Each structure stands twice: as C-alpha cells, then as structure tokens.
Amino acid sequence: MAVVPAPRPLLGAVLLLFVSAAWGSAFPLMKDLIDRLPVEDLLAERYLLAALTLLVIRPRCLRGLSRRTWINGALLGVMFGAGQTGQAVALDGLPSSVSGFAVGCSVMFTPILTLVLFKARVPRRIWAGVVLALAGMTSFTLLSGVEEHEISVLALVVTLGAAVLYSGHTIMLAQLSKRSGGFPAYALTVIQLFTIGVLTGGAAVRDGIDLPASLPDWTILAHLSVVSCALGFLARSYGQAHVPAVPSQVLMSSQPLWVAAIAIIWFDERLGMSMVVGGVLMAGAMLLALPSRTAALGTARERGRRELLTVAGRAAKALADVRVKRGDSLRPDRTPVPFIVKSACVHTETCPWHAHALKGGTEPSLERLIERATRIVHAKNPPSPGCCRSAGPPGPGCCQSVTLLGRCLCDLMEESERAPTTTRGRWFRSL
Image 1 (cartoon, helix red, strand yellow):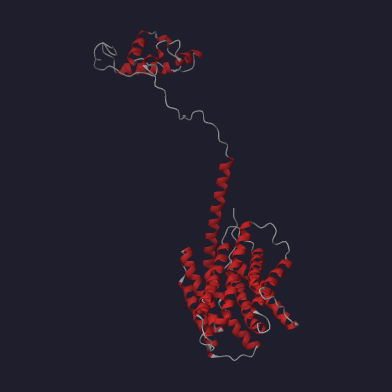
Image 2 (image 1 turned 90 degrees about the horizontal axis):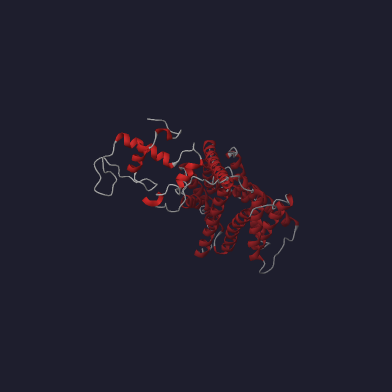
C-alpha cells in the first residue's frame, strides 16, 4: 500500500518565504557587483558555483537517476535559464523599476497558465492574494518613480516572456512533486543549476569571462551562489512539495518587500510611502496565500487515491502477465460445423457414435440419449400411420425431425417399440 506523506503547509510556506528573502537579498548585492563585473559573467559564475557547491556536499546525488529525471531537470533549467538571460539582456532597454514590475507579473501569469493548461480551479482567496501581490508589486516599482529612461517595447516583451517562463517553471515543479513516489529534489536542483549555468555561460564566453578582482567581490559572489542560488533553489524544490503552484508564486513574489527591507537596513535607503503601501499589500497577499491544513489534507488524500489507483493498475498488469493460460478443451473452435446428411449413418457398424457407444456399456452414448428423448416424445404425441414415409404427406401428429445420425426420429421411435425393454441403459430410469 502506498504511504502518503503528511502535508506540512507551514513548513512549505516557511521554505518559500526563505526563497523569496534569499532571492530578494541578491538584487542589491548584484546591483553593486554589476558595476565591476558584466552581468552575463556574473550569472554564469553564480549558477555554476551553486551547482558545484551542492555536488560537493552530495557527490553521489546524480547516480542511478532515470532518464526522465535528467530530462525534467534539464527542461527546468532551460526554462529558468532562458528567463534569466532574456531578463538580463532586456535590462539595457528598460528602467529597473519597469523590469522588476514585468518580472513580477509572473504572479498573475501562474494562475492563468494553471487554468488554461490543467483546468485547475483557483480559489477566490488565492485570486485575492494574486491581486494584492500585483498591487504591491506596482507600489514597489512603478509608484516609487520611474527613471528617465526610454522604454523599449521589444525589451518589455522579452521581460514579460521571462515572467511567463518563470511561471511555467513553478507550475512544472509543482506537477513533478505530485507524482507517485515524489521526485529527487536534490538531484533535480543540481541538474537545473548546471543547465542554467551553461546557458548563461554561453552568452558570457563571447568576449571572455571576467572574475571578481577583490575579496569583498568574492564574498558577494559566494553569497549569491550559496545562499541565493544553491539554498534558494533547494528550498524551493522541497517547499513546493507542500504548497500548490499558485500560492507558491504568491509567496515568492514578496521579493520586493525583502529588497526594500535590506536596502533600508544595510544601505540606508529612505523609507517612502510607496514602500509602506507595497509592504502592507504584500503582507496581505502572503497571508491569503498561506494554504490551510484542511486543503492540504484534501490534496494529500487525492494524491494518495491516485497512487493507490496507479499501484492497483500495475499489480493487475503484473498478474495478467504471469497468469497461467490453460487450454480449454471444451472451448469451441472456429472451424465450421459439418453438415450430416441422412445417409451418413446407414450402417451402424461404421457410425462413430455407435462405435463410441460400444467402448463401454456403462457410458452414455448419443444413441441412448436420442432413444430416451424418442420415448418421451412418443409418450406425449404418438405417431399416426404413414408417418415419415416417402409416399404421401405425413399425417397429423407426425414428428418430422431428423437426428444427428441422419435417421428419422419416427423410425427410431418404431424401433424402440420393437426393442426389448431390458436393453435400456443403466444411466436412465424407466418412465
């Protein structure tokens, strides 16, 4: 019997909030490090170092993986890596606030894609959380003031496409966590981090890769690699096993709240009204996105029912394969039934049924069965003179049936009248 793990929505929410805080802390640090390091080089070094860190901690995590796990990990990495590359390339054509708002639109794309792709019903409470998160994102980005920067429509479309890829990444990860037996979260994280690093590194090797030049820069890169990427992606993989896709995206969309908090505490940025309004809206969105334990239990029961159906189907298939198929001698074959003419058994010595009857005097034969049936018919409907003769039509009450032996039943009835009663088979009782 499949064992369904107990749902832990609070643990999943805590892990996803850690992901949001870890990714939010990366923005001010990256903003500082980008002045001294190209963004393509920074992304490639960040994700490759994160993958190597997890691989060093568990060097055997990639052994014995199925081909499906490798494909899923690579696909997740391609989706997120393509989003990161497109977002980084489009930064030159958009103000940072507009770019942040466009990326934050993934919180709106996630329920729409879930509804379109899987026909999944999103509760009204979660829709309210999506609206509050989008309003908070607007307050943090657009209402805080847009720099005097020309907005490129192409760059905006590319950034919105990156947001769609981030939403698809969240939905796919949630679908993988619903499979029976779960999924190898640690190995999947390592594979997708390597894939993201290779994709972003492909854009960085065109003009060479620059490394950090000072110890503080290496410290920032270590934080971006270990805390933001390695631990962040790992916490996300485990957290989405307890929280559905749409609430997960709402919880992770609180990155601007953490960015503002870090900027105020560590970089002495002034607290504005837009930050206060955005923080309140984000807090409300996170409260609405927290999954209830009742809903989590219902999801776990549904997952357990699917697992039981899967196990039952596999067991039925295995039993069908090992079942011994015995030949049934009584099963009728597909050959046509031979037609027996009236003259087939004129000579009773050569009749197969008669020969079979002679093999054992105590065995019931076809002739004896016919004899018994003839006597019953004769007792209920005695034949009239001239019955079953070729000259003239049969009289009333005449039996016109032809037996399997090819002889008229009336003839057999007449012979049975002449035969002594002592020849009856011991298989039948007298009338």
